[in-house]
Image (cartoon, rainbow, N blue to C red; front, top):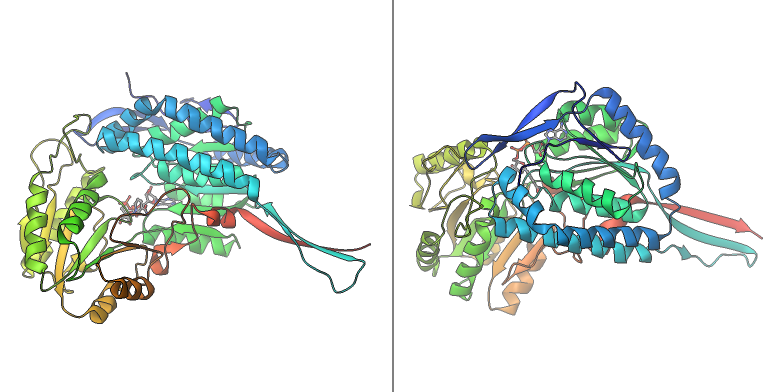
Length: 477
Ligand code: NAD
């Protein structure tokens, strides 16, 4: 089975080459060239805008039952093609095949959740002050949306946006990640085969600055959704607000984990270490800053180090690999810089801390401890396979520590005390708090951050908030 050539998808057509710029796609396992993609030009962007605008005129009036049916068909086809889509994700992104297949399965659930929820987009009737006046509130699709999805969960992060827009009656232009495009191409193909009318979804690739600048300014675009880093999110949100366009921003995180003295230590270690190295830690909700009560600090650090020893790093296509390469070479360099800085400032490297031999972007699963706030690791999002551990004594004080950064996406705590659990969950400044287990990012629950981690939710019943407008109608009969 070959890695596919990556075309554009505009107005229901897959568009190949035609003299356009081509970009190479690398396999992070060995940095060999997997294939090429066709990059968009200005005329293509104009076509995508026109197509999405034209399609919106009819799609916004399409019954939710029809939208629901297409989303369900998408989910069914995705399940049938899981192996092939998963394999291509492993090739261009690097994660183990088992994880890639899991990602595709979860995406089918996202599509089905939106298929169900779009039948429940209700307005309301407000009692009027006069008996012959009728007052109603309608929720209407916002229009043509523009979305940017990242490379870490190329299928999952894209399908949340696409499902919400399509289910709400909007149309969309999506720019997927140019490093990991196969999943977004698969989304286009699946919707194409599921009978989505042309123009409802358009996919483009190419220079991010050019595409975002051109499209955000266009009066056709009515809403922006971005998942990626905080600096890029701030730039795009500023541009969107300059043009009076609402946006949803799913940005970076640096998730604190508080392990209390009364926690079930073995359960906490098993849960967290297993979760931490999923997707080689390239996860915005990945637990990163481990605050461990000083009475159990040494034990937890030793147990985590022991568990990390069993993690097999290798080619994502090998069934025995628990962790694959990082998605890009630059991420390995970032990991080395963080570890070196921490080491220089007095941290202990308990496990890993080095890049691994070979042509690929491999970095060892890493545990560094005895960290202080002067170290870059405790301030900058690592977005990679590093656990950083720091002891604490006082629960109130560690909450201040956890809230110290401008990030506010995910947070975690392990404790058997319901008083501690209540206190922690109320005091942590985060969009999501998970206590004693990892329970985030399923289709029926809201996913999103606060502070510099962004705004707006994807998933849960909040999923449509960013894709609908509110219209008040008052009528004298
Ligand atoms: P980056 O800041 O270079 O890019 C982040 C993302 O934004 C990429 O997907 C990139 O293609 C996109 N992008 C860059 N400029 C853009 C523009 N002008 N318009 C539209 N999109 C643009 O970071 P990176 O090195 O690719 O990734 C590492 C950082 O990204 C991490 O620190 C992490 O915070 C963040 N990230 C977050 C998520 C998430 O799920 N929230 C996902 C992937 C990456």
